Image (cartoon, rainbow, N blue to C red):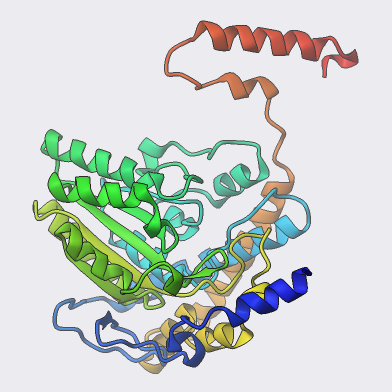
Length: 381
């Protein structure tokens, strides 16, 4: 069997893909939406949102800058400067909307794709890129940013988030937690265990699932017979499906869920219905398993274009504003490129640091053996 024939078989074997993927008309009745793909504001009785023109412009700036450094990262990986990159292309609104809904003391537990949330929490993009370059393990202080280090293990961070949220309750604090994960992770045992504990202990945690339709090459419809947000009812807490390409809806629904969690009403599952416009990671080729028609249909629902349309239609931003954002984007792109290429290689012995909270005899012995081995070469390297 050739790779080519396998790819054709996979495309043909995906009849369960929702019509929305083929038509782009994905507006099931339960989908919360406050900004249409055409950039028109609509209201939802359960999730009202009052927002100023300045806040709308700030969200637009976030979306543009996040997309820019994501694109730079993809290009840098193709040039051999990064080992890998997991692009967020198409998911900017879900991440920026939910990220901006958090208060300063709230805490986020990400996967490895939450670059937009990291941006909202004040993490320098160069820190993210350093991890994918292999020169650090994240590079930011999680307790300073209230943004945990990226988690590669699928779904495990939902348990960490739930435990942290349970601790908040015991401390009597007025904070909440967001656990990010994808549609593929929703099938993991860890995620379902986190749902159970969060529900039973009424933990102040919001489970934010970015349903980008594809778990690498598997469509969501091969994992579930019902919309993902409905799974929450089986665990005893609410689930909401929101238009994941609508930054305003993501902001409003996440803000509601966090407030609910802080009030002692327990967890919420938010399913942000979006689409992964790019590859799963730079090691993936999505043309082998999905049709171009899907991607083209979702381009019409681009999160940045719809917010720009709103700003222009209601004359909330002028040409000077858009030019300034574009100029800032160029500056960020240049800083990212130069910053990554000038990152020094780390001291090899750093791998032995922070293995345990306290000094450990075995780790010290391993460090000494490595140093002696390295020094046995000419030049000590």
